[in-house]
Amino acid sequence: MCGVFIAMGIILDYLRDRREVQISTEKRNLQQQAIKDLVHTLIDTSQGTCDALSIEEKRRREASLAAARKAILSTIRRSIGPENGVRVNFFEVAEDSAPTLRASTYAHEGRSNHRSTRIFDLHDESLKLALCHNQGRFIVDAKAAGLDSELPYQTFATMPVSSENYLYGMITVDSPEAGDINEFEAKELLNLYASQFALTFMSSPKEAKRLRIGDICNDLDN
Image 1 (cartoon, rainbow, N blue to C red):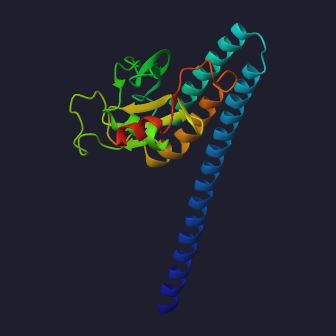
Image 2 (image 1 turned 60 degrees about the vertical axis):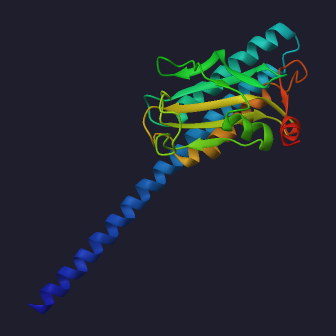
Image 3 (image 1 turned 180 degrees about the vertical axis):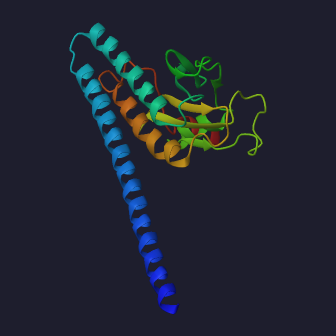
């Protein structure tokens, strides 16, 4: 009888170890596929931006850059959060004397009310972070954080579209359900896409509306 129990124990240990190896292999394969998909997406969007920047004629270049920006936002929409409910907007500089950002009329993706009506000014923490520290903002649950209860979403992330010295705007991602966006997506992945987006302004940086990072914050401190 003892021999039977020992044999059964050995068999169960073997089956458990085999199952753990199988699960680990499946997870690793899924992770590798996700990384491959992300790399291919980044290659495609980077190539589109490079192609647009290489066009010499201004009107064609601007049209191509607008298409590249749209493609990047579409990629963000597919890469961050669940399949349904997420909204992506690019907020561009509307006023520079009194820093204000408004959602672009062309650069938005996602759920039916996808163009945001929100206006960012220096009263908003998201714009302060972007202008003073060139940083994004992530709120996983707006209600828990005590934010405006009238917001049409519960989780959101913002990321500056910027160079070292200039802010060209911000990308925002939001969803009605708290927790739909995780920290990796909000801070690492969105930052990567925002950096790509910033490249589309590099061919004519002086012509693009922009705010100088740090200057306005220094004025506020004084």
